[in-house]
Amino acid sequence: MPRSSGSGGAEKPRRPDRAEQPWSPNEALVTGGACAVNLLSYVFLDYPDGRYDVNVAGFLLVALAALPLLARHRHPVPVLAAVLVLDATASVVAPLPSHFGAVLLVALYTVARACPGRVTVVAGVATAAVTLLSQSHGRTPPWPEIIGPLLSTAIVVGAALAVNHRQREVAAHRRLVADRAVADERRRIARELHDIVAHHITTMQLMAGGARANLAKPEVVRDALVTLESSGRLALREMRQLLDVLRAGDEPETTPSLPQPGADDLDRLVTESRLAGLPTEFGVHGPQRPLPPTVGLTVFRIAQEALTNTRKHAGGARASVRLTYRQDGVTVEVRDDGGGAPPPSGPGGYGLIGMRERVALHGGTLAVGPLPEGGFAVLADLPLTAEEVEQ
Image 1 (cartoon, one colour):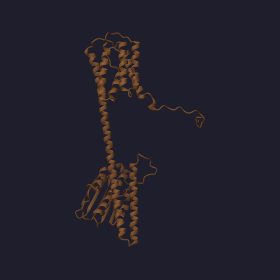
Image 2 (cartoon, rainbow, N blue to C red; image 1 turned 30 degrees about the horizontal axis):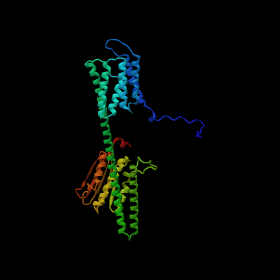
Image 3 (spheres, helix red, strand yellow; image 1 turned 45 degrees about the horizontal axis):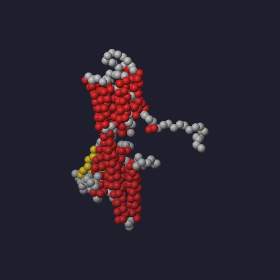
Image 4 (tube, one colour; image 1 turned 60 degrees about the vertical axis):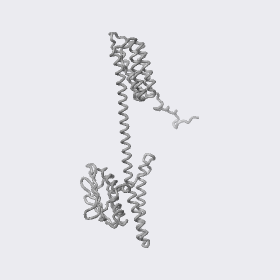
């Protein structure tokens, strides 16, 4: 037995799917419009001998010539052939002056839009030839009557080819924009991965080395292992967030992602730097206020990368981090009193490149280089828009 609905009523009839319909509403609208234009042209056609006569058979054939347009997108060439046959039959049954109807225009335009160049050329030649032969009524037409169908055919085909060319340009531009967006996202993810790996893994390595060197001091080993565990947990969390971004379109996110680090996390970053063996000072100047998430993340990553480079390339140095809030922006500066050797920026050392790209995304400036009194400095100036300042 068929299962009835919970209300006891009959099942609702299923609405036909758009793909199951024989034609779309747009096709029906175009067909009706072209048919109306042709019928009006037939009724009010200006005959050269001054007579005015509407043939019923011709009227019906002109109307029937529009019906094949309902299938013009699925079968463009057969539709054009059917329109040519019906239009030629109408011209024979009810002799008409030279004309190029709206139905024939739509059918030829559809072929030129949908078919290759050879098919379009054959269709254009056939349309002009059949139109001339059917409207000549066994006589040699004058030049104006010959030029009319030829010119109309050329205009319709040319317009269709121009639209095709424009659509190809738009599609190519859309692909270029999409590829550029993908490349930008890849660079962003590469910067994030570099910052996570370079900072946390370096910290974990130093903490592990410090614990091994101080096995006789349980308290020092315990502090080092706590920092090692915390750094590993943060690295895992941030890498998981990046993987969630990469999987964003594959499966729904069931839990909200943890917030990205920002300027408020610089205290934690400086503490980790001290525990990793780099004496680091931290100072904040100006009225402290919340920063936009992207700006705060950039401030954090620049300080993180600069401190990581100091630990890697300026052993035994001291560092300082200074965050300055201004009315129209924020400045982060990281200095050390090491040897002043710049970190690598080519293959295998993408830290400075990543910092420059981050600052450039916000329209800011980045100054990196050795100090006259010795040491190395990283200074990033990030402007804020009026809307961001008011937040």
